[in-house]
Image 1 (spheres, rainbow, N blue to C red):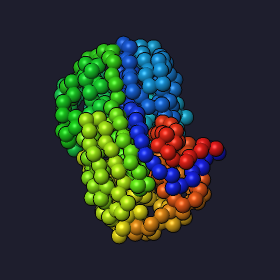
Image 2: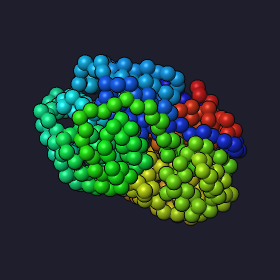
Image 3: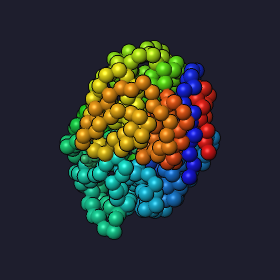
Image 4: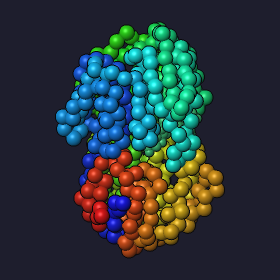
Length: 416
Ligand code: EPZ
């Protein structure tokens, strides 16, 4: 199994360029098959989850032409199956976006049901509620969800929880339903807006993405487009927390500072310096940092995908911080690994009480999931001594060249 070997304590200084947003790209690529014309998607990150999504698109018969590392041309006119293989769902949960895109375009889809995952149970009841409201019938058999409709019609849908996945999925199907669909209590994440902008560039009529009420007027067909994905908010936030935790000085380029505000606010509260530019932020980690409290919430709240990284930074700040995870039920698994590195953290259900220490000590640790894996890398970069991190396949699912980017900043990291 591949590992990162990290010698902690190197000064982190310099520039890093952020790639395209993985979670926007997953929705956009699934939506790209909703037309029979060519779709050119730029700024896709070259990470494992995206490459699996592209394989899944090819597998149902669409043409996928990789034009460069970060650009792909897709043509959905040759799709010959509305069934997604179970193997893809095992590899990426976002395979469920094919329910929305295939149902919208072909009024028919058969997609494996996702199971639980490392961070929690992750039901899809709200997706199902939305599709049924649009007139689709749904049956679940043999681990697959089959859905079809003679025609999709508009609906007024109120989500019981704020969910990124259901908002994107139902928005895609509603693009090709008859009449005006209204989604209330919609998620407002930047990637929702990006998927909506992408669909609009294909001729969809979506208004209000980025607010909690999205209005979608159905159209008969969508056309080809050329579209560049927004920068990844979470990759950027990860390097921001790295600069803070390691007392580094990192200029993080190709970002939308507005998307980073909740992270910037917490780092400032801790005493760090954050400069915002038009398309960059610079974080200078203060030698002494203060405790603060963090609660994860849907956007514009503090992202759950940044919870492990900020916890690592807080574990090195003076005093006691309280971190409350309110989106997923099982997102503190990595704390056991941090404790092996000397952290003083107690977790009770969804709350972690984090008492700051001066420095982690290097250890052999294991990444339990994607964001926790990135957080453990940050801890290892700050630690005294050497750490060996396994489970880095998780990190590769969402971070492109993570080790190379860190090495370019001066970090002592080897991929063995
Ligand atoms: C997306 O997952 C992201 N994944 C996750 O990123 C991210 O952590 C999450 O949103 C929250 O921001 C992708 O975009 C591919 P949700 P998603 O539906 O859509 C509950 C990463 O590290 N819920 O917003 O699956 C659910 O259990 C990953 O990149 C229902 O109850 O998340 C959770 O508590 C991991 N019923 C909450 O809503 C439903 O039908 C939010 O989940 C759907 C969700």
